[in-house]
Amino acid sequence: MVSPLSQTQQNGFLAAEAIFGLDQSLAAYQRRLQAATAFGLLRGSIERNKTTLSTLTKRNSQKRKRDYFQINVMGLVQSGEVSRILLPLVTICSSRPERSMNWLLLALFSLTEAFVSSIKEHDLSEVFAELFPRVIGDFTIFQETREMFIDILRQKCNENISEIGQMVLNLLPSETSTKKRRLDGVTSEVEPLILKSESLVCPETVHEDTAPNLNPNRGVVFQFVAAQGDKLEGVLPGTSPFLQGIHTGRQWCWERQKDAESSNSSEMRTSAISAMIPDNDQADISFVLTVGYKAGWEIVQYLGFRFSETD
Image 1: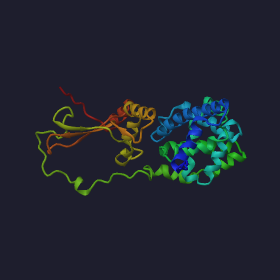
Image 2: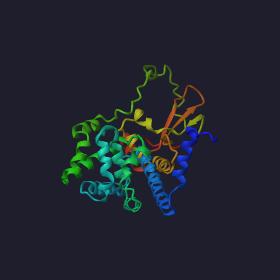
Image 3: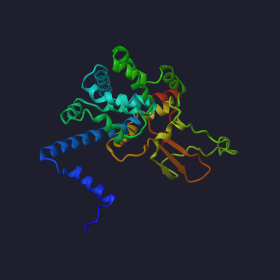
């Protein structure tokens, strides 16, 4: 007597049916396989964009990407092909706008003409909105960039009054709350670093013949790199020229590009700020900030540095 299949075996058999197209014609199986492959390519690009948006500043966002975003918004509110793809996602977002607004922003940021054509070619228009949240999950968008996209959405929907445009407007936070967050400087998601009172006590003695600022190339025992980039706003508030300068530097931009290319990137690290630990506790710890050239010169001129020569 043949024993019945266990639940695990049954699940495995059902998975095999779906994966290998059992009991399907070859033509039907190949259509499904091509559709799955096309969606896999879309998903890979969207995952990279998701990583990019977590750190992308308004200043560093590419004009081409902003243009695509605006074109997709117009396609959404004017009932174009983009509307057919994303309208179900708007409906999904309406049930929990605070949590799911990022899905809509990411989709509008990611869709290109080639992607829209691929979705249409493989008959994915009807299912894209259902699959999208399940594979993307929850994520964050850099606050300044998120507000920029919301402003674009609000502007285009107000300029092109339509039923879909009104649905999108109903999802958006009030304009006053957005402006208030901007004035606050530091977003509520990032806790600022508050130095302990003992850390602010001046040293009792200062050796007049020894400069406390050590040259980082000498007398350094440890050099710490790859700091947690998402905590920078805790020590350098969002409007800080130093933080803005870091975001415009080649080091920061190169790191973010590498993050976007990595499908396994789970946290943001940066060597745009390094800690130099001296070989004795009589010298101060030096933090070396790498900022963009132009922003750096503005900071140098503002601080009125004096010239120093080193051998």
